[in-house]
Image (cartoon, rainbow, N blue to C red; front, side, top):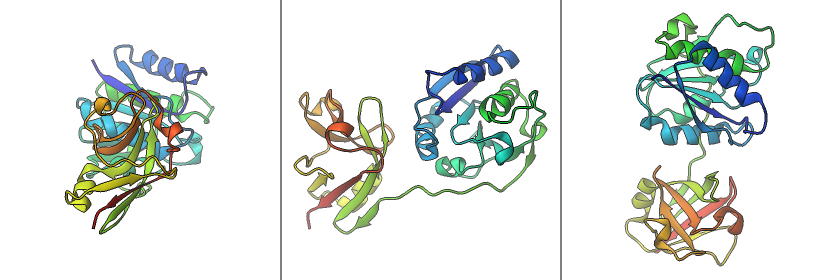
Length: 260
């Protein structure tokens, strides 16, 4: 069964998401729609990129991913269909692809489809949905767009490192309140070199001096640090909301200091 995924900032309280799904199903009733997330912070392209990148490699070849974040109106910019690692991504040309790509795309086209509406304010429904339905039925990119090698570039904020420290930031907070940073396990090992360390936050008195392997590494209500399934350093509270209690919202700093 062909798979189409949705990553949007539409939420679940309005009718917008249902109209997107209705458009897809009306054009390919045999496809399977998977909701990756509809709770992306409004217009947060970087957050949407982190979420899709975290799950992308789990999907089979020919999966079609619709990115309904920061798309704007259809006539306000370019919209792309991208074949990448034998899957497809439909997104506005807003830098999204550059935030998830770790290798070159197989093919990129600028979408140029005949629309069945004169309304041009909802590309997720009126452009991406029919393109996804077409691709899910075995269609090719060349038939729905013009080949291009140009796309907007964005750069993720990288941690600042020194001989004895790493300064990163929170890039995602999940629904449990776990705060995920841009500090990777690889970077931690590279700079830390097995030295003792302290993880500090904007609020003093909540430092962490060890890395756990699971949430139960800490007692209920206690804070902990661990490298999660994406390989990123995560700050959590066992059965608590770390982001609120430790002041670790999106963009907040996190500093690891290593012993000399």
